[in-house]
Image (cartoon, rainbow, N blue to C red; front, side):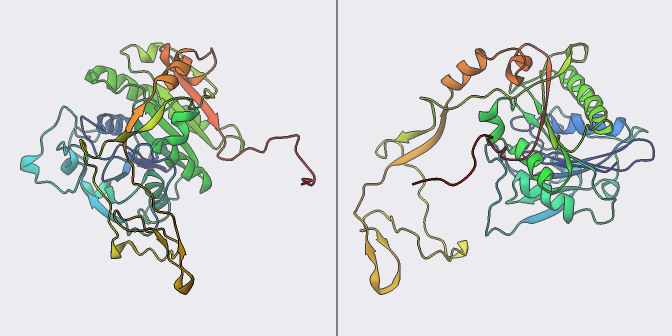
Length: 364
């Protein structure tokens, strides 16, 4: 089995075990943003899988299944060893090997303990790419010399993706959803902690995840299940604790918000300016440049828009009500399960399910 690992790693066919391809939304290996990538790849390789990787060049968290239209994506084949250096939150690569530190992460090796040559398992870094874009490129474009992909793995995410609030926003889940819309079986994988973890805990979570992935892919139920969302608690005894089927917690925003208004006099935000390279041919744009009277462009019959004062907002998630919903979650939900130290496995369909009970004409 050929597995595409989007935003994180991709697996190809081996002689013994099936393999996969993967992606993630945290970007290249980094202690800060994507600390689980190399250990997980190494565990996959030890299990006999041939691994190919497709990752965005920077963090794409909270982007869901988005594609950035109008952007030209640059996909660069690169040796995984060149990505070992911790580049913070972005990888422009490749890096000089003499400058690449281990950052506490192991460089994957083959079964004989030697570093695997780049030519046998190329990794791909995608500039301007999203998890969904990495999935598309991995499935259709980047590995023409390999067998068609049977399974897509997106992850492992740095932190949990449990509940619909996080699931719908997650780039990791978005990468798996994209694979499902391409007719591929997919698994979104999250390691449920943003705290720094001991190497032994990461290795235990990786071993359990590989076992789960192999079990689920070998016994895929039917077409009703298009993807699985897995959340693995980060604890040293995770392999000894149950993995259970769950439902996603149904929660919603109430008073909290993802954005906070900025006082322009005390915290000047970075302004965006019109850029001729944006290739934006939409003539319905509203001109809101500061100091001008906004105008809707439309030829001789321009429609004047009432002037308005600009307000500024920065990304500053206030998640208290979401956290309360997690703490109040019930047995059987993904949040309750992972918060209590068990691994949650949620089977999903990639669709907007129709609500029954509505039919016929709407009388206005």
